[in-house]
Length: 350
Image (cartoon, rainbow, N blue to C red):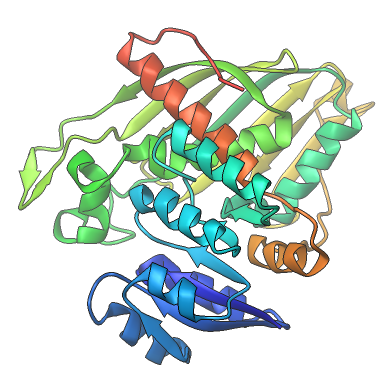
């Protein structure tokens, strides 16, 4: 039995609890949150026995195998490093840290103590994403030349997710003072991981970030200064080039993640908004001459939570590790640096 604790019991933690509770051989035995009363309410909701407001105290007292960190971004690094110090395997929400230096510290500490790690890049849960990565790696598309990816949301122009002007859950995402790195840090990080998981590592990028006028500059304590649209020109280590873009102003898109990959033998189109079997399509072989796209069957795959638990049981690192998280963090840091320098091309630090 893998005994696990959840650290940080806000909204996203409910998803973690539900997923881990569904895994045979895994039990959530404790939870922790620095906000008074929040962990207790969470424990009552999910049937968790032990409640703490201090992670250090919990790690000392509880016989845990692993922790899942669902705190605010800036708390990821200190919390993970503390768990690693106590020898616990660690799953962490994205982004891994709020800067590359801390992400590398986390990666290095875990490696030195042979800790199993995972970063919750949730779009790797998609069978289509896993199949797309296999197709590219197989060489079926030939030499990869051009890539086009996007992650689009519409909650700044529509109310499908509620009125952002009246909800702290959305307002903090628009305020750097409240820990937001804008659309770049919130969903751009998913796009960078999604593209590099399928296509390969990113070597360099140019990025522009924009904060558009919303008709108001401040709502209560929230100063609305975080970026809400990004566009990046990306150069991959395999020689391919492409564009990746993300925005919260994309009317008609509740939460659309898509990628198109073109090689000298064929192309691939994945859109996680499209139902199976149209989620993933390819154009290869004789179909290239006639521009025919065909759906690809994508069998079920374990989600990131199950991969983490299985990795602990087998004592073998799975995807996505802290190393993957650090690579995505390097893209975020390079994007910020590029945008601050007029869209200058920045090499990704290895």
